[in-house]
Each structure stands twice: as C-alpha cells, then as structure tokens.
Image (cartoon, rainbow, N blue to C red):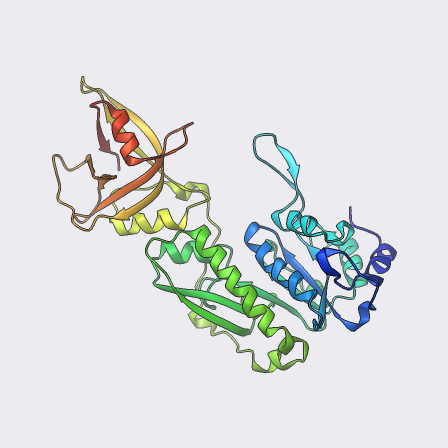
Amino acid sequence: MAPSVPALRRLLSCFAGGGNGAPSALEPATKKKNLVFMGSPQVSASVLGALLDASTATNSSFQVAAIVTQPPSTRDRGRKLMPSAVAQYALDWGFPRDLILTPDRTGDENFLGNFRALNPELCVTAAYGNILPNKFLEIPPYGTVNIHPSLLPLYRGAAPVQRALQDGVKETGVSLAFTVRALDAGPIIACERVEVDDCIKAPELLTFLFDLGSKILIHELPSIFDGSAKLKAKAQDDSKATLAPKLTSDESWLSFDQEAKILHNKVRAFAGWPGTRARIQVIDSNGNPNTLEIKIITTRVSSAYERQGEADEITFVGSAMVIPCAEQSALEVLELQLPGKKVMTARDLRNGLQGQKLRRLI
C-alpha cells in the first residue's frame, strides 16, 4: 500500500542519504536534489547500488528520494509473494520501506499524487518494465533519463540484448537517453560501444551493460542537473531504428534445418529465459525410436565438421554432442538438461546412453 502524501513529506524531511542506508537528519534535504529511481529486475539493482553509494558521498548533489518498482509477484515452487529484485536490494541496503513504491500503473492518480509529494527533480529508469505516461513524465523538472542496453536507435524495446545476440552482432553498447512518450526514442545524452564475444550469453551481457550504464549515469548527473545535458543531447535518427520485441516461450524451439550459427546465436540470446529447446530421437538396441525433449544450455559452432553416418545422426566428438544442421554446418552442444534433471554435460549424456543412438528431429 502506498504511503499517504503527509507521510511521504515527513519521511523526506529527514532523508538526506545517511551512511549504511539509514536516513540522516544532520543536513536538510533541500541541500540535495531529489532523485527517484525506477527499476525492477536484478540487473537494475547494480544501477540502484551505484546511485545509493554516490548519494552518500560528502560532495553528492542528490539524494535517492524514493524507489519505484514492480509490485511483488509469486515466484519459485512455494508460490510465495516476493518483492522485486530492486525492492529486495533496497531493503537489504537499509532504504526506508515506506519510500519503496510499487504501483500497478504509473498513470494512477493516487500514485501520481504521492509521486508529486516527493518533489522529484529527476527520475532514472533502468529496466523498470512499464511505459511511462505523459502526465508522469511532466512532473520532474530535470526530466526522466533511461539506461538502455543498446546503441540507440538500434534495438528499441523490451529485449535489446537478446535480440542483438540473436542477430549475431559483433558490437553493441549502452545508451543514456532522456525518456519521451515514444518507445526508447528520446535524445541521447551519452553512449558507449562494446565488442561482443561469440560465447557471451544474454544474462552476462545484460549485467555488464547495466554496470557500464551506471558508470555513465553517475558521470553525467552533474550535466543533467545543470541543464547542459539537454543542450548536448542528440536526437535519434528514427530512420535507423530497429525494434527488439519481448521474447516469448513459443520462440524457444530450435529447428535444425537452420545453419548452426543461427542456432548458436539463439541459444546465447535466450539463455536464462525462456531458454532453448529441441526434440531428438533416442533409438534403442532394437531400433525403436522414442522422442526426447531437451533443453540446450551451452553450444558452439563446429569448426571442422565432417558428417559421419546418416544425415540426421547425432554423434559425439570429445566433450560435445554434434548435431548436423543446414548448409553442411553442425552445432556442438556442450551442456544440456533432460526433463526433471539437473544440467549435465554432453559427455554425461553419452555415458548414460548405454549404446543407444540419437537422431535429430527438424
């Protein structure tokens, strides 16, 4: 339940970013500008951590006045109602619980009233999860800035890192941009490019880019507060924009009538959620086939594939399960997961086959 407006005012009057997360009444809050952070998943927590640490510095020009995050949701087998990763991080840091706001909609008038009571001067978003309406964006005088893990205007949308990896890009980056009503279309304050390794998976790249984005944000905060960031921010070229729509579980299936490179990129991109799945056949000693659904965890593209046996036969070479794919290519599966089992290596699977053979299914 959101705190009342008077309660927010009382809490803010003594919150000046004291050490170890505790509010301090030693300095009036008016000396520091009120920054509101908005984020939800684990990757957002690193940005929040950087802001909280910076806010406690003796020369800090801002305080984290409130945190806005997604409402608690049910997770894990116990189906317990759990706070978002950002909310949990804030609580562990010692941030006042009453200043962690979890609205269902940021356009709700009750929330907007409480939000205005915070006297927010700047909002920072990092994977918050909801589109912000104009009546929200109009409130903070310094605007709202967003950390977006792509080189805007490329990969606007909910899954920029995943879609970039799926496309097999060799370079990506992170952008700090002002938020406007159109999706990820605001003027860019700063950006930084990074090279993409062929082996990196989406969760690792996401973490790296948000860590990098938090450093860019801290560096640019003075220019945002003195107004020079708005003057130097560059408008995006909408003609070069590409979209990065949200992933769906239906996309997780692999089809071996595609080239191995395409499948390897998809495995990297979909790591974490929803993962990648495939169906293969297990042929017993009597020649009877059974279909097996597996989750493919880690792969690489075979560098020297030579077909052995029939075109759809799955073989084992060293530590890899080798699946033939289109255009004479092959996907080497290094780690996989059987239904109801823990992640295993391809070598473990081979040892458990006891003479049974494997065939791919398209």
